[in-house]
Length: 359
Image (cartoon, rainbow, N blue to C red; front, top):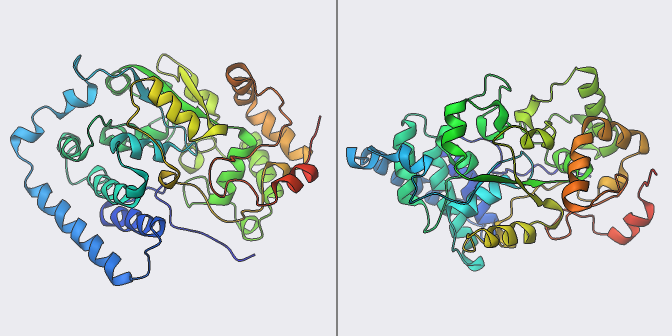
C-alpha cells in the first residue's frame, strides 16, 4: 500500500514550524483544509501575534513565573502528569492547558495550542518569560504539564532526551522537586500495541527508524529487529527520544508514577481519572485525540510468537504492571484501542480469529 506519513504534532517543532504543524492538524480535523491560502494567512496571523506579544512581555509579567510553575499552596494540585512517550501524552497536555472547550470547538483548541507551543519552543525567550506568557494563554483551571512546561525542555545528561520524555528518576533534583508538586499519574499501555503504534507512526527521531519494513507494512519483522537490536545493545533504550524505554522506568523513584491510568480504554479512562481528581473541565473529546495513521490494517495479532517473546523479554516489567494494576494478566492477549479512531483494524473480528496466540 502507499506510505501514509502525516505531519503530527508529537514531533518536536520549533517556532513557526510548530504553528504551521498544529494549524494544519486543526484544519484537517475540521475538514476545512481546502484553501491553502487561508491556512497560510492563519499561520502568518498567529506568528505576528506571538511576535508582538513577545515584545510586550513586561517586568510585571515575568517577575514570579517560577513560583507559579512550582505551585504555591494556593495553586497546589492533587496530581501532576508524567508523560510516557507514545501514551497520548500530547493530547492530555493540550487539554490540560486548554480545558473547557466543547467538542465542536476542537479545531479552535488546536489553534490555541499551536500558539502556546510557539511560545514554549521559543528559546529566544527565557524559561521565566515563556512561563509568564503561557499563564496568559492558559484556560481557566488549566495546568502546564509535561512538554508544555519550558523548564522540562532541557536535555537529560543521562538519557540524552528532553526531561519531559525522561523518567523522573533521572531528572535533576531541583527540577523534579519543582515540578512534582503532588502525586504523579500517567498512562500505562500494552507493550505489543504500543510498539505497533510506534511502527505505524514512524516519526523521524520519535519512535521512528523502521526503514523499508514500514514501507511495506511488515510490522512483525520490524518489531522483531528492534527488539533484537535492543537486546544486543545495538540500539539504546534511550534512542528516538526515549520512546523505547520501558514504561516501568517511569514508575521508579520518589517521583515515579503513583496513579497509572489504563491506556486500553483511552480516552474514557483518562477522563474518569481527571474528573475524580478535581479536573472535570479537562475532558478529552474524540476530536482532541492525536493518534497515528498508516498501515491501518496491522495490529498486535500480526506479531509472531518469536517476536512477542522478544517483546516480553524487553518489557517484562510493563506486563507485570498491567497485571498488578489492571488485572490484564494474559501476556499473550492481542489488544487494540477500540475507543480511538483508526487504532484497530477495520476487520477486527476476523483479525481476532487469525491473530497469533502463543500460550
